[in-house]
Amino acid sequence: MITLSNRFACIGAIAVCTLLALLSGCNNQQGMSGTAPSTTIGTEVDDSVITTKVRTALTSNVDVKSLDIKVKTRKGEVMLSGFADNQAQIDLIITVAKGIEGVKALDNQLSLKEGKQSVGNKIDDSVITTQVKSALLADPVMKSMDVSVTTRKGEVQLSGFVDNAVQMTHAVDVAKGTNGVSSVVNHMSIKK
Image (cartoon, rainbow, N blue to C red; front, side, top):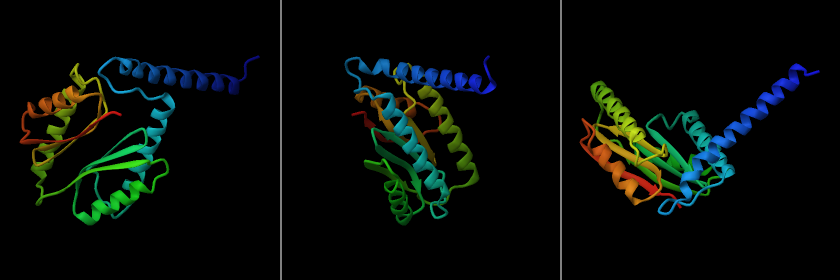
């Protein structure tokens, strides 16, 4: 007789197996020549946990006061990008991130905000960010969701990890070709 708790255990096991199969399928492309070395499923899960812990710590900290911070993790290396109000805030963000268990290295790509931003600028920037993200996700050369996009006053910041220099250059070109983009700052790194 199959009990309700046995059914839930089976459903849970199926969900875990499906997730692991999906994650391993994501890595199949990375073994090809010219691409970055692959990571294990365990490393990817660890990186996701680290990213979540850093994001949670930053949003929980009342002194950070910004959602303009992007966090990406690869093999324990945390990349911080986006915009902060002042240098003291950048220093605090770095300190908080370094304090998270599992962070092996930190790549600070944060920029200082320049001047006040109007409500119109914020709306325009969110539209630009959405358009650049959509273009990158739809682009067959990119094949990656590891690129973060942040926009302030038309300046687009690209950060995260890409497989190779071709993807990096292509991502910048895609962003530059997006309507409303005044400039593109490349803070991306090639996967190690």
